[in-house]
Structure formats: structure tokens, C-alpha cells
Image 1 (tube, rainbow, N blue to C red):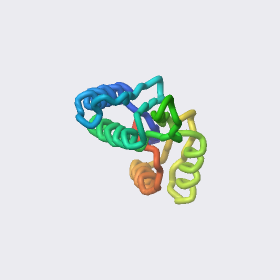
Image 2 (spheres, helix red, strand yellow; image 1 turned 180 degrees about the vertical axis):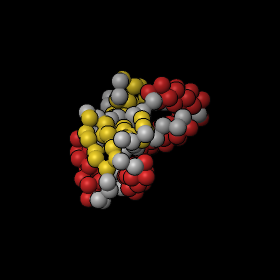
Image 3 (cartoon, rainbow, N blue to C red; image 1 turned 45 degrees about the vertical axis):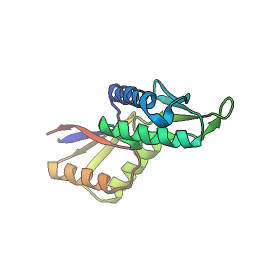
Image 4 (cartoon, one colour; image 1 turned 120 degrees about the horizontal axis):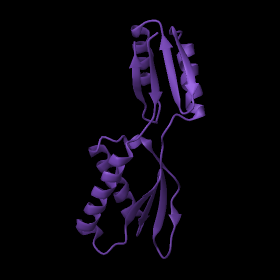
Length: 161
């Protein structure tokens, strides 16, 4: 039976390359001269340190631009609230969302079942396996899922006949 998997993964090497490019741009840009703006990655967490809110917003734009250049979807970023750091500086934590969490998986399963498509969906950890009798049914399922307003970027991989 034909099947495919729905996953949500980021290429962390490309994220690291985007952060390196962003750091280079911060050191060379005139509006960042003399500032103590930095960005660091630990596992799936980014920490952005900026002098003030304006610089933080500029760093957000830089981050999104550099990620998009590296073909990493910026929708995978989850921005946490801004915290005050030492002096007038601000700090923000950004989570890199990976994997299909339980709530999103249940929502996708419910949407596919409500659409009356002739496919079965199974939750397997942080990914979903969709199986059907015909390839056309699977393609209809992909089109239906893309039509949903899901904030997290999804990839459709491991397509088998």
C-alpha cells in the first residue's frame, strides 16, 4: 500500500550557517557599531541579546532574512517573551520547533478523517504515517493538509508505492 510520512524537521547545519552569516553582518553594519548584540544557539534554542528593543527587532529581521536565504522556514521559530537583562539590554529566547507535537498531530488526524478521504493516519512519535490504496488519495491528503492553516512547516517524505 502506498504511504508517506509527515514530519517537521530543520536542517540544523543550515541554521548554524545562517547564524554565522548573521553574526558577520552584525559586526560589519554601521547601525550595530559599538553595540553588544549577539545570538547563540544551544541545541534547539536560540538566545538573542540586544542593547534595546529597536536592535532586537532589527536582529529578528536579520534572522528571518538569513534563514530564508538558507532555505530554512522562518515559521519554525517560536519567539518567547522579551526579558530585561543587565543595564538597558534585552534578552529573548527563540525555540526552533521540530517534530509534530501531539496536539498538532491530533488536529491533522481529525481534519483528514473529517474530509472523508480514503486514507489512514497513524501517529508515530513525532511524525505521522499516512497510508492509502491509491497514490491519488495520498496526493489529495497532502493537498488537504497544505490547505489547512498550520503555522509549523511540514515536510512530506518517505513516499512509497
